[in-house]
Image 1 (cartoon, rainbow, N blue to C red):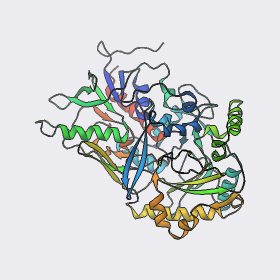
Image 2 (image 1 turned 180 degrees about the vertical axis):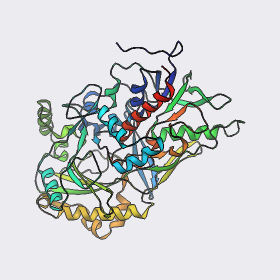
Image 3 (image 1 turned 90 degrees about the horizontal axis):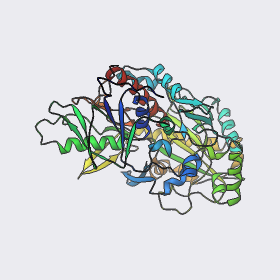
Image 4 (image 1 turned 120 degrees about the vertical axis):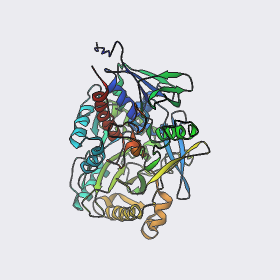
Length: 506
């Protein structure tokens, strides 16, 4: 049994707003020292078994509004879709499959204002993640399965002098199998942290107001269902949720005499990974997701292989191999290209397609700028939260995407990968009308960060408001990795240790 720890006859109460990647990580670390209440606006605690459990099948969730909410960012003259999870566990349980810890240099710059460092981040990483083992209460990681296209992709990269390496870290040019958050059979996520949890989860409740006393100290929250008193409140609702609540707090209290939210800087410095793809029709069948999606026999066969313990595409989200590149040759990784075992007819059903994947065998090379320079904002307009990441507002991002596309074409024309290329879709547009191709085909990488980094101090406490804290993707000033899942988990643990040290008296 877990030992109960009391302070002055009772445990102090901590409210964590948000039951996603950050919120559940923090709640699991604080629960032995405080009475923890997690408030999650979504009411779905039961996850669809096969779709949720098997990583590859998670893509089916993106066409079901019960499990996924779709919003649009107005950018580049287009409506660019962005997806949010309606499930307990947040993005970690639907889109946290590709794993990357990231860059030592950027981790150092992010952690310095919090009086922390890269070594502490590594310590948290090895505490919470398990490599190639199925460990209880950890997020388990495995390498993605490899096939003939992966081998050709990696060999062609090797011929371009990109060596094999550990794709967990992005400090130098390397290539290899990606790491995915999966155990032997099923997806692994922050839900592993809350087995036999001690804290309460109030699901289906949305926090409408943060409650302060006359001195500017947090005393609780008001939800759509009740008022809950607490000693501390931690905002972990993600970039959109955290910024929206604080921006509305500023707006709704502007006429009050003691408006402690007035001078808090919220909504600036919002960044998303722009994502671009080069689609390729293949010369032969290789059990791509295109083929699997249109064949009942192949579906049954891969399920059989999966459950007899063979490594298959089912363990991945469809991505299997990748490379980190320094395309501007400044000594810092700026681009990740990733091999996808499919070509989509649209983009995650965003255009209403009945069939997501093309019928012919095919693969794609996905391009992600690891640390984009285009910076946007979140604002409240007529009571509605508006997100504008301002994709491609930085010329450096456009230049890097130009270089990325040229690099991908060069790679696809080189041996042995060229042996598998029947046709590069839109090849003429990519080569001769590159800027237009970029503008018309950029999508969200679904990795929003920023918006609250200027609002907090070295302890993650909101300036001018006592006992109100923020810890989620909104506190990052830059992307430390090509995927935000691991960085958010690690930062949640770093924050938790600091919070316990500063606020636990036992």
